[in-house]
Length: 327
Image (cartoon, rainbow, N blue to C red):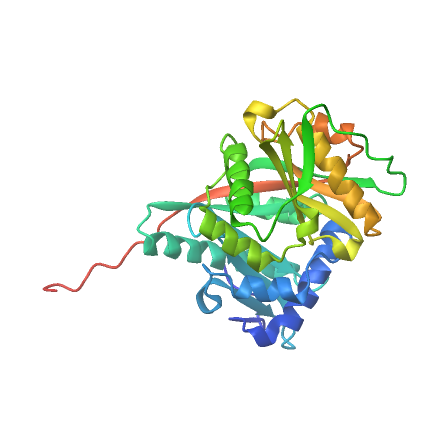
């Protein structure tokens, strides 16, 4: 699939961050109603540990040389599935989204061959207004894998934090205590082991990733039941530009579920966000995750605001050329 006549494509560099950000902001505003990326996010995508921009990313330029599209690959763990993002300016770049997708799928086939795998699974996200993108993915052979729901609540009417259930205590994580961080990771890992898409990440790699993401430690919490660590909540700064505190992950060990641990962690996080003057709290829910019932989130005042569909496609590895005869 080729670009329209007069259009061109090239690889991005860090010098392109402002132009890429303009495209992403236009795409996000159309898809979710507001810009959801900043320059640091673009730089992080171009410098991620398992991404080579000179091979894994493309820019699309209109006949005037203006960047109107950006395609990238993300694989946070270096194993398992690949995530492909194709951002376009909705007013000027819609016609390059499918050609950019085709280039990324070809690259995924190469990446599978480089890793010695027979195939790789690719995932692409579709937000509710992106009906044309939805059709493009279906036409390319993608099928619906799951749906995520974004939930949110105002903090203006946040009631006083009730006492936790008997035996349950909630405290901030101790970021200077290596054993406490290891315990936080253990809870997170054990809690998500029974979810369909979980890709385990060892402590060292997890520690590296959270340091790259940035941490506001006083918004991370550990819950204990009768002194035994039972749950953990990790916050994220990803919605600060919306003046919103965001729960990145909520983990409760199986033996302690349905005892009010998750609700106690959420209420403590909401109270902390409100103390800092945030106007809302939010999180995302994977509807295929058996450990994340909507009823829990609704019980603490969260309500669904939008959905995101995740499509997937299995891409066979590219054929490896045979060596010349006699070699």
